[in-house]
Amino acid sequence: MATTTIRKAVITHLATSPTDVSNITLTSASLAAPGRKQVQVRVLYSGFCGADVNMAHGAYPLQRRTPLTPGYALVGTVVGLGPGTSARFAPGDTVAAVTVYGAEAERANVAEHLLVRVPAEVAARDDLLQQVTALALDWNTAYGMVQGAGGRGLVGVRSADVQPGQAVFVHGLSGAVGQGLTALCLLRGAVVYGTASKRNHAALREAGVRDVFEYTNKDWIAAMKAVGGVDAVFDPLGFESWDESFSILKDKGLLLGYGGNQVSLSGSEEEMARSLWPYMGKLVVRGMLPFAGKRTGFYYIKPGTADCQDGLAALIELLREGKIKVPIKAVWDLTAEGLKEAHQSWGKMAGMGSYLIRVGAERA
Ligand SMILES: NC(=O)c1ccc[n+]([C@@H]2O[C@H](COP(=O)([O-])OP(=O)(O)OC[C@H]3O[C@@H](n4cnc5c(N)ncnc54)[C@H](OP(=O)(O)O)[C@@H]3O)[C@@H](O)[C@H]2O)c1
Image 1 (cartoon, rainbow, N blue to C red):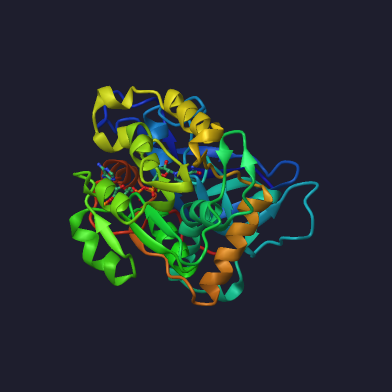
Image 2 (cartoon, rainbow, N blue to C red; image 1 turned 90 degrees about the vertical axis):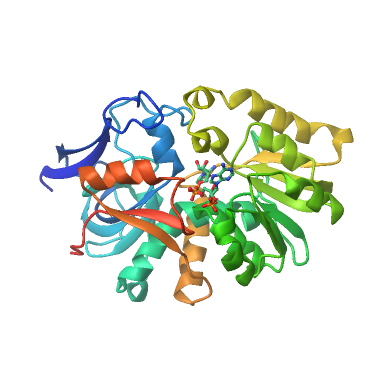
């Protein structure tokens, strides 16, 4: 394959304030032929998520230096195979992958082991392709925490292995990951509680959530203690929120943190400068104390592992079978304006579900 010219998003430097989007740009660049064990993918959709926003502010843990191209997950069409690739994929196949970087680009060279096949009947429908893009990161993160293979990682327990009849509490039921957590816990027969903006309460109760609370007050703490506590809490807020979440656990209950969203959602420069690391240490140590009687962990998706690849394949199958429906909150085009708007809108929009960037419509 020859080198091609592509358009891609570039975060040129770290934002200078919570509202600064001058660092979000669209650029033309050369893309080399796929390297060893890489597959070149023409991107149809990229996911858009909190990590993209945090990377623009230098708040994503251990992130690459700028300039960088964000885009944590993609769906696209195989257009070329690098040396050393297997016969698993051929040009024209539709694939999905969690890439962490680089999906907000017209083409990307992706390590073959990160790719998951999208069946032709799913690939034929644009609405399903959008949903697969959201499955790749947002719902796959939820899947790992709800029913992933689990075990213990460096930062504690990885999966709640939610069982029928258990009570769970989901912070941000209406969010991209929150919607995945809600649907998968309900599918497993759990009793689901959580928080969301008032405007989303009716729809969440309609979907089967037992009780929804506003995050602007702490009424949920007393309410969850009054029902005897919960078996698992899924908390993307971090910081002081992990203390509050820990307090509503039943004996042997599990607190799974999976983000430090509290400071990004605050929109305050001072808040965004706070480090999550001390709180992460406290979270993990708490779960190790034998007398605490409760478990803790910080879940992070690990692209390329069996947990991530099998989780995504299982979710695509659930979608193909019509057992899940993934709400899409917003889709922006891969234009400079679209990208800036996505960064400005994150966390502030009405509605529920995942955000996407539409990169291209050309399949072959
Ligand atoms: N560890 C991992 O592997 C992994 C993977 C993916 C994502 N993440 C992390 O997960 C977090 C959530 O990502 P997402 O894409 O699901 O976000 P999202 O779709 O933007 O959802 C944000 C949620 O937060 C709620 N919210 C808004 N303001 C709030 C506030 N002040 N206090 C509490 N909740 C508030 C929103 O509720 P309303 O809309 O109802 O207002 C919404 O439910 C991010 O920190 C992201 O980095 C981690």
